[in-house]
Length: 417
Ligand SMILES: *Cc1c(COP(=O)(O)O)cnc(C)c1O
Image (cartoon, rainbow, N blue to C red; front, side, top):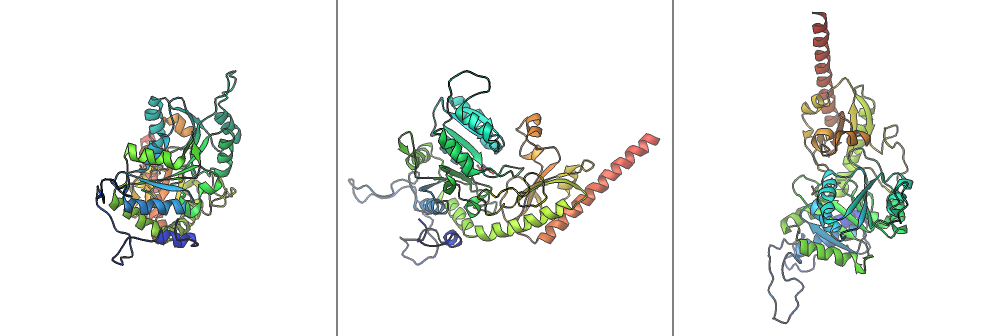
């Protein structure tokens, strides 16, 4: 319900028209009120208490619902609070098929929290249609038991940190054949690059901390539901209950920070992916680099030239492996412009070592199996001048190469003496 008839870039800036503002302010007000006066005892005011509803939050919720082409939006205090609320619509005995390469916090929430509440988790490679269908059907190889279809499939549009593209339309179609919901974490992609509900997904989730807010200054989560039902209740009502009863709502000032971030989403992502592509090309040609993962990169590793699968672009995150002789820590510790930090999607460029900084929860064997090696570096590209970013990487590579040469020299020195 953005301004009717406007295109995406316009909807990003305007959201829903501000209706109750008598001052002429061009931005929606931040309502810092936890409670609202009733006109009378018998009245049923639109707002009564801010956990249940707040106009600033509602502006953002309406805005994201419009951008994701969904029925209703919900704002939460973090991405994980949003995911918790979504998964709380299931009950003990339900089985959820989960992409085998999902955000670590979500992995832990499923395996260490929801598993205790009787929700069963079946990890699967969502890129493998046969494995996905078997997991959805609940047919374990070789078992004679009756099939027990999954209640939902949960996955991310682009996997982290290897940037594999999940085919939302195909996965949602398979889920629906078995009566399961398709739930998509669209954090890496945003509605600017893909609207998963249009491809058949039922629920979309964002860590708005990343691209939507875009400035590394707020923690927030968003959910948008399609106009469907789950066990006789509309998805919107189920999510509203979860938001209001679990209570992890986003505070008004944070709602406004996310709203403001969304206004420049198009500009930021355009620059970020333009920079990411140039950095990917530079890395591909670098003698210090073994592999590059960025789906927009012809000749890159991972999924080169893959069908776009509905994506209008590939975002600003990429990853690469340094050659064996370099220590990736030498590179990362000597970056001057890139900040050494987890998180992504902001205006400033960040670099990190997944094996140590973001994916350490995965047992090493499992981590290597999915392709997250010890020398894999993840970059989140910002909006800086790309020439400065490339020069920064180059000087860090050269430092790491000198350090490696020195180490090798010392080794041969000790071998001789
Ligand atoms: C960061 C992130 C989350 C968790 O969001 P928070 O806002 O940190 O709670 C979930 N999914 C993905 C893909 C993320 O990158």
